[in-house]
Amino acid sequence: MSIKILKSGLFSTIQDLGRFGFQDQGFSIAGAMDEYAFTLGQKLIGNEGPAIECTLIGPTIEFMSDNTIVITGGCFDAKLNDVKIAHQTVVAVKKGDVLSCNQVLRGARGYILFGRPLAISQIAGSYSTHTRSNIGGYKGRKLKNNDVINTKQCNRYQERIGYCYADEIVNYDATTIHIVEGPQFEAFSSTAITNLVSTEFTISENADRMGYRLNGTTIQPQQSADIISEPVALGSIQVPNDGNPIILLNDKQTVGGYTKIANVCQSDLSILAHKKPGDKLNFQWISIKEATDKLIEQKQKFAEILTSIDEQPQFDLTQMRRTATKINTLLKGES
Image (cartoon, rainbow, N blue to C red; front, side):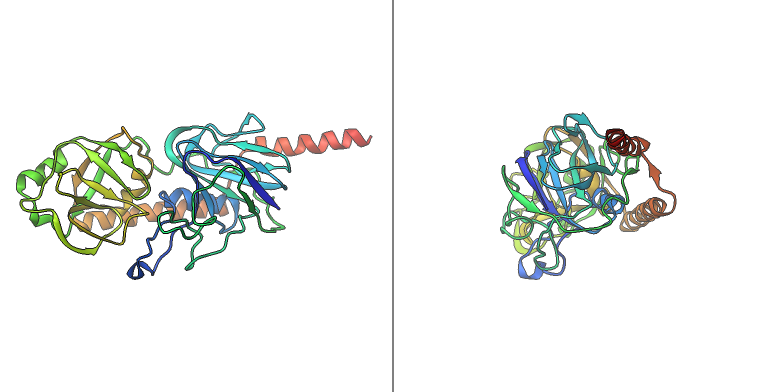
């Protein structure tokens, strides 16, 4: 049982929630940029397997055996055998079927999860790919054309066909990113601190899973931006000597030697995951208490969504009709 990558897409990697507990040894967390979309996919498909995270242009996949799939996160122009399939809906696939994810229509990153999960070995407790250190995922790299990835046996893989979640869990239109003071906040003048939240920034072409470099008003520290290297947090906004802020993301280095004026609140990281070069954003200061309360509320609401999928699931009846049509066709053929 396996899948074959016919076209790899722009940047497709195997991810889970990330690799924790090894940053002191120099290992990045990596993991899904949009943890909520990934977790929603696991809940819908009904297992804890990894996902293929696709960026802007998704992969084209041939199924070498029967399976089920769900695509969550950014909405792609996804088609199965050239027929459009519903977003965030568990769909049955047969041996020989071809899934074409094509271009993203809304958001930036999507997650493909499988009822018969990808047979990927864990490295340091995680399936996640970190391409810069060449570990995790499929051969420690992004997927390439003609890669063949085995899938695991799962006798219950068809149980969730038709499960769906129709609502967006991330506000893709949000442009305001909430921030708290960073470790070197006092290294910046009051003017620089004000400019950070009064400027509309543009995400530059230098934007990937490691971080987003921003273009806009320069935010320079009062003295040199160089400091003794120290651990950096996910969402750190570091400012090198050129004054152009960089938001550090999942594949970031574990230590950095530039001043960090602020840190993006954890609750807004999934919004950032769906921004792409050319998108605009602005920052807003909030207190640590406000950031904590915002995150707690967000996680509570998401937990309620996950519970509702188990207790009061939504169904896309078209998936049921397709299955019934195939059964009727087979029965007519036998009569």
